[in-house]
Image (cartoon, rainbow, N blue to C red; front, side, top):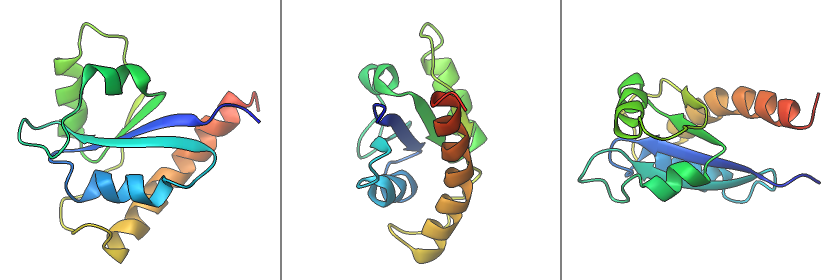
Length: 118
């Protein structure tokens, strides 16, 4: 079995969306997961080591992708994929989980198939 895909989930404050995604995928044997926020006040702020660790970064909004690209412009970034999940939900909200799964799962399947050489 190949090494798990290292997935970093990012939102603004690392309070609702990215921690929910991390919790949803924490026990998925295909993955290793972390979450972080891009804002200076984030519960867990995105770091250089997070970016270096990740095989892929999933952000909730386009502005988070832009912020990562600006903040880490001197670094070779892994793919940064925008999920388009609005900041309208609380932690583990069932609707948030449904939206996240619908957005994340097709991207994960494609990445894992590509990685497997298929």
